[in-house]
Length: 304
Image 1 (cartoon, rainbow, N blue to C red):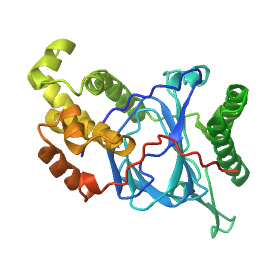
Image 2 (tube, helix red, strand yellow):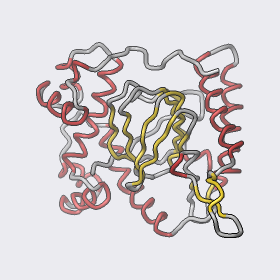
Image 3 (cartoon, helix red, strand yellow):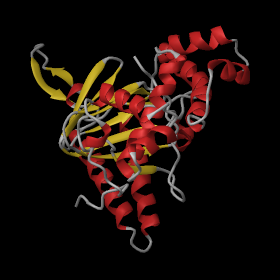
């Protein structure tokens, strides 16, 4: 199992980050990772699957999923899809934290998130979502509208984008917020917070010659203790974790530039293009040269 901590940086001038999911071409796997920010994935076309705590959350067109802070998850997108990703810094919810400085939301309107409602006679009546159907539809509409406004870049779009964004936040805290959280969730979140300081540094310096001994000294741990931290909380050794980071950045560079395979390999810390290609095939099932490349970082397609 390979966990990665992901650092989320808001778009300049706006309190959120918004983009189309990078696995939209299909045949895509995002290894297990986590981040302190909140994410909302909203599928417009196609489908994909999320895995949270070993539970699969299939997501199809018209459905959304809220990924909580420090919630370890992975993504599989075997087919083409159009999925909007909204990333929200945790500080946006400061006034709504629990006494333990924590906040959590219901997952969203996926089929896996539905619970059974029973009649007074004890027979199954219907399936319901964590939020009402009306609220779920409203959330999907708002995400679509935020994306439309964001890519239009019309005069004053920043004001309209902020207005829609804050309506999304209102819906989250009024409808999807969980008011009681188990102690085990709090403990796990704090452990991941501690490891995040190290993994954030790794993501900022992944092109360099990073070594376990150097990081251990930098953060005040022994080599053995830091190694155990990765195995216990990230469920993977240090070397594999670093390889995961490099592959994630290399994949993005492959999609969004016309750089050669050799350049991408060396630019992202791989020993050679052969080593990069071997690891790429292992993860994605195809050679990097066969990937459909696109220089545009965000599609201009809008959802009316």
